[in-house]
Length: 234
Image (cartoon, rainbow, N blue to C red; front, side, top):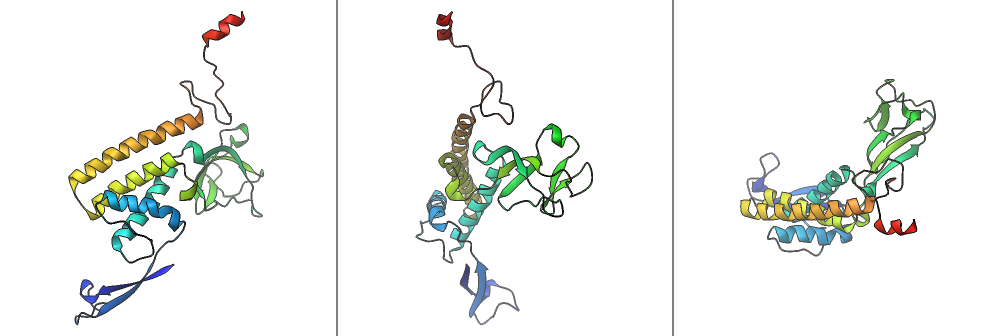
């Protein structure tokens, strides 16, 4: 969606500005994906910075624009870390007619899985495709390639603890950008650390992790801890 901004010409240098003080017209692209679902998060960011909440994201308020863009940026950064909800192993990606593998738009990271079939390839993302550094080519002649992938999800598809962490982190960043109060920033950073701890706890619970880890490609840990009540079976 395109939003029309009417700004004083005195805010700009010539030739764009008019010294007479007339209005300066500029068109600005404003994202609207899942805006209704993301609006509560944006309002939470604004309120954390001492700003008034809004009823819609489609407006010319620069604070709203900063909050919304920061929310999108932080969401992408946090998801790129790779969590249980957006990471999958051994996903087969088929090649096209040129034996190339194009990276989908909803993929943040893609790498060849550690399986015997991939012993002779070393992959990275390059120019929107999967590139084999070992053989110096974009072509994969042996058909589908098993890959470990980290997906990018829309806001509505993120788990609640992850949403809370993203919102808290975005609040601290927005505070540093539009407020500049060191005390407020420290308070928001403490909240960010708390919500990250909750997000990590959620992630480890969902992953069924243990001290001994879990091999990739398995649904559960192979390790079975000692359970005293089983001694009665003897």
